Structure formats: structure tokens, C-alpha cells
Length: 360
Image: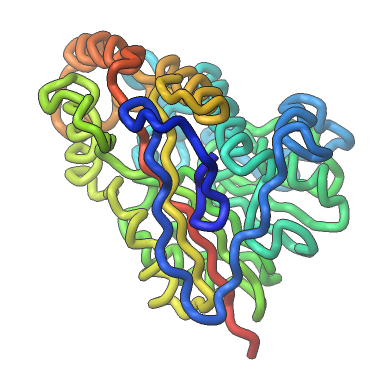
């Protein structure tokens, strides 16, 4: 799978049915190159991990988070449940349907990088790790499983993480747009799928920098809207393209932009990070590519988006644009047809980058 300039892979010469090679921002002088990803099927690769067999210990979840009953009483909106802490900030639900989608998305990320959980130099050797917006906690749990020497903390607005976790993993419910109160710095902060979460992403990047020890790393993965296509097979008036543009507009009106991830490297640089590495990769909307790995990734991305389409867009369109629930669901029905159309060679653009805090 062509993900970086160093790992380009030969694919079919029929360019109308193949994802074009991913582009890579030139690596600054002295920057670290992404480590070679594991091949699927190797030890630790995508064929050898499980999303459900990580419970090797028990965490006293309530004492760790000091949750009040009000935080556990989720808000109901358009038939879906949402977080109650800092209500209205995040646009996705936190119910079982959405949580299943998050775990599918996690698997797609692991497939993208050959089974690796992370790619920066702290993919091994980290001592204290923070998983921002941990969601179901699946990344934090699997990282803690694979690195028992590391202390892993996951933080989220919703208390939806499991109670049975590795002994070196814990979860906290908090709003990271507010003051960070951790008393000890981290040496690795992981940021994934947080588009549309923050009113000022630069401020959060700066908080990451300030809460890393010297030599620590921030790793960021995020898509952006609208959807893209390189061979003009996606009609300009199709419902899928229209919805991704509407989602971007709704998020902008809510003051939480969804098109800022291409600016992450500059935000890192402004915060003080060095040795910044940036890669753009592409997630096919369905299994339209001929390349086997990309086709597999397309299957997973279709499952990821198709099953969670309503949850991904209800808040953005009803809160941000004033649509009714019925109008949104009707558009989702049309979009679902486009998502499954393999004649549309479209993809979700995703930015991956990491940077290091300089040594003092």
C-alpha cells in the first residue's frame, strides 16, 4: 500500500481503478523518517491482534474519574445519546452504534500502518502516554497490552470505556479544552480522529507541547472534509460530495472546523516542535481499488462510514445548519447509495504527522 514516499508499492497500471500514490510533505532536514510498518501477518501485525482480548486487569474506574451521576446521564438528541460533560461540544453520539463504528475505524487505522498502533519513535519505549479523545479506549488498551512498561492514560468527554483493562491503563473523563491538571508530564501524546472537536486546535497543540517532557513526541492522525477524487469519476452533484461539504459548513458554523488537519504541521512548528514528519494518505470509500490491500481497506472504510452515517451527520446538520432530523436521514439514504457505488473512485483524505519537543 503506497502510504509514504519510501514505501510506494507497484499497483495496477489501470489508473482509473487504482488509488493514486499518497503524497508526502518534504521531511525537514534532520527529521526522523517513519519506521517501516509491519506487514500484515507478521508478529504483531494486523492478522494477529484482537479488539476484544485485552482485559488483563481491573481498573477502579469510578475512583479514577470521580464521576458524578450527571456525567453518566447522557443527553438524548434525535434518538441518539451524546456526552453530558461540556454538553454540545462534540458532534458524534456515544451510544453502542457509534462505539462499534469507532472500533471499526480503529481497525482501519491498524490496517493502514500494517498493524502498527503508532509510527513515531515512541511507538516503543514510551514511559507515560496520553491518548486524547480516547473514545471506547481501544487504542489505549491495546497500546498498554503491547507495552506493559508504559503507563497509559485515556481521556474523553464520555465515560464509555470498559472497566476491565490492563493494570497499566486508566481512563479519565475530562474536557481537554479546559485547564490540564496532570501533575506529571508525558513522553508520548496520541491524537487521532479529533476533527471538529476543538474551537482552537492550535491551543490544544500548544497544551500538548507544554505537557510533554523534553524529547517527547506528539503524533496526530486526522481526516478532513470534503471527500476527494483524482480521476473525475465522482460527479460534482452527487449526494456524497454534497454531504461532506454540508458537514464542513455545519462544523464551521458551530465554531469547530473540520478542514484544519492539513495545517497540523504548521501548528506543531508554531508550538515549538521540531523534526516534524508529515504524510497524506487516502482511504478508499469502498473496495473500488484493484490493489488487494487497498481493496481490503476500502471494505473496512465502507463498513466504518456506512453503518454510522446518521450519527456522523445528525448533529452537524441539525445543530449547525438547522436541518430537521427527517431531512438529514433522507439525505443519508441517498449518500449510502453513493458510498456503495464502486464506479466512484473517491477517498477520504487523511493527514498523519508527528513532531518532537526539543531537549532542554
